Every structure is written in C-alpha cells, then in structure tokens.
Image (cartoon, rainbow, N blue to C red; front, side, top):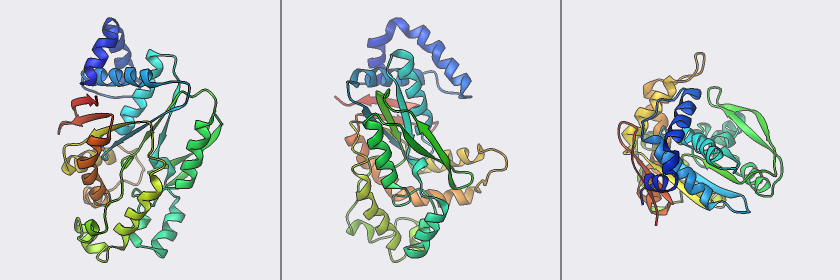
Length: 296
C-alpha cells in the first residue's frame, strides 16, 4: 500500500491545513522539498500515531549517506506532534561515535582504518544501549552529541524522561546484519584492495555488527532506498559543501574514498533491507521520493 494513500484516506479534510504547516516547517528549516514530500511525511506520521500504545514505541530509520534520513526523521517527529498529542524524541547513531582519541587507539591496536568514524565498531554500543533502556523505562538521560566538523564528541544534552510516546533512531546502517566469512574474502573496492589487503578491518567491522543487533531490534522500521552508490557519492559531496565556513571540509576525492568505508554494507542493505522494513521509500536520482510503500 502506498503511504500516500494512507495519508489521503485518513486526513483528506485537513489537506490544505497540512500543506500550510509543511511549507512553514520547510521555511523554518531552510528546506526546499518536493510538493509530494509532505504526503509521504504526513502519511508516515499518521501510520506511526496509529501504532503508538502505552509503551514507548521504537522506530528505526536507515538509508545510505545523503539520502535524507536526518531531515525526514526530524520532520516526522514534528509531523507526529502536529497531528496528535503524541510526544517523541530522535536519536542519531552518529552521536554515539567513539571519541577521536578512542578511535585513534583502535587504529593502533587493531587496524589503521578504524581511525575513521562511521562503520560498526566505531560507536559506543554500551552507551547507546544504556541510553535506549533508560528512555524506554521513562528515565531522564544524558545523550552524547558529536561534532562532525571537528570529528569528535562535543558534549551531552539532557533528555527528560517520563513523557515520551515514541523514539526515532536514525542511522545509515540501522538494521544491517553481519555477512559470512566467505563473503569477506575478496576486497570490495579500492580502499579494501589498497588498505585492507589481509581483510583484518572488514572482518572486524563484520564481527562488530553482532554487538549492534539488540539495538537494531526496534518495533518498526523505515528504509530510504537510494538508487545506487553513485547517488550516495553525489549527495554526500553536496552535504560536505554545505558545512559551515571554517569547518574541516573534505575534497571530492576525499569524499569518494570516505564513501568506500560504507560501500560494502550499503550495497548489501540495498538488497536486503527492503524485505525487512515496514515502509520502503525509494528515491530517484533527483533525490525525490519515487515511491513509499507500506508493507501489508
């Protein structure tokens, strides 16, 4: 079922009012989004509200770099609060990166590629697990914040417990599963050929994914399906150009190499995640929503 139909069936009488709200949110956040975006957004929000009950509901949102996970997650949170009395919060996998110093230690003790943030094994899984459990039990908690421009943890923010109906978790590899050892024998790209010839890094990353599985066990899931890895490179480069002046910006060639850290898992998720997700939102090469299907 197209999630747009879910929206039309549930909120037809509010269409004009919803569109005005959506345009205001876009203006507030300096966003230029396609006119059909709000129907997918509001349809997803209506679906999420219908699934809320007395317990804290958990929703995982995954997708390749540059797919728009953070924007969609943020607007979805706002949309749910706009159409209902439900209150939620958003957690980002990126905020749980190990500190720069911790990754440097990993790079020296296991493999140099682990100095670069992003892949499984470069997050503080124990901290993330503790935060999630405390939120589910209605407790206040300190949530870390990560400054990508400085490539390090910048501090913590306090989240008040007790009044949360749902939590959105967004992350590029949310829901990914480990592969077989045989699948890791051959290098996947130039990065693995030139810097991981013995397979130490990719095997370590694959093993670490097992530690994430309990975290990925959310009640609901959404997958933003990018058209291909070339689109990921294009959109990630656009993100880099949008960083504030004075930030440590990567060159296009550096972004291309950076994407290769994620490529193996991203390609596997493109094949596997659509079958496992409650909603699959397909993006075209113009970064527009091509379709948004709710699993029957």
